[in-house]
Image 1 (cartoon, rainbow, N blue to C red):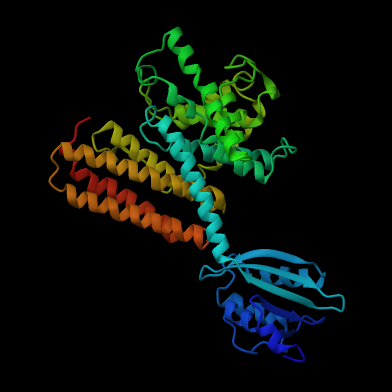
Image 2 (image 1 turned 90 degrees about the vertical axis):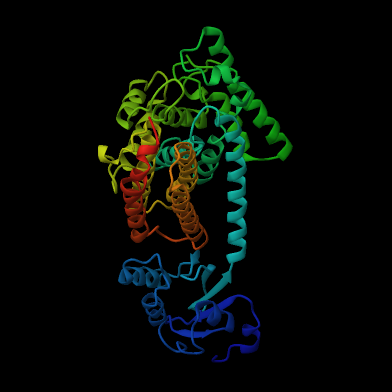
Length: 459
């Protein structure tokens, strides 16, 4: 290794690579060879660019679409003597933390640390926290919605709207990456106080009386109190603190005519103002005991009409941009031939189609956080829809129920496996073949498998 203390370097757990002032590889240790699967000494004495080209051709840099551009940018950073610190996921799923530090005498020292276990553990903590929050929310929400995925859709729309505000430079003192992550999780708990609302009011099909309306308004303060208590017990929890804030204020109006406090404008916390729009949009486009679902166009028009009165105009504009962006791609389009003759099943199929189309739109924009959130929605909603459908056709005496249930179970297992691969291998993108499979499976299932049970269900 050209004078390097070989034994000491090979004893290191971290991968080690040294370049000289001409960016020629002088040495690398055992850990580097094992982490990158490089043959012993093969690239010593050769330009670093050759090593990068070798790794590119091998498919090592899954994020690099343009190899020449990737190589040029990497070499320019080194020539400019920039320090480089980043994380990278290898095709085999290994997560590496990499640092490249320029030496005073010229050249560079690279270090590589395998953080796969730590990364997976952190992902598990995040997922368990999210699952716990969703469970808390669904204790309250399950009586008020027939999907249980309302809170996940609201969280995604909150995240997308907050990110759109950041792109546009609005509220720079508040909206950063930390806020975006916390406000999305916190918004899941926006209606947790409904757990205290009686069924006779929450599930009432007709208009509420004045007294009933006052009772349902109490859920804001109840939810805030529950979450504030949980926040105090945990010590410091950013998402619980924001959750309490959202629960209390997401029914306030920008003009001061909301509840429970009648505050207005920027006195309403930003998190509450964002969640207010996301919550109303999803409520309008979902079936409720007292109404059918609105179209996206109708719901957006209603929110625009309320801009400046119920909603913050700046946030309305950002929200509208999000809705436009998420309809860029359409893999499957609903038509009357897909109907199975049952209104609820047809609506659920339309939601599945819309979810897959939004997944494709997020994929086309390489929006990994949103793709991850949509996968969670798809897993949850598919499970709900399949259970609902199976109960219905079982009551109708469908003779191929077991076969139909097996098809459903296979799909749930497949999409859950795809989610695990996406999360833990940290794929840069979801993959065209996966989107094509989703499109074809959904279209074939609705037009084929589901049409066979049509005589056994009613509307």
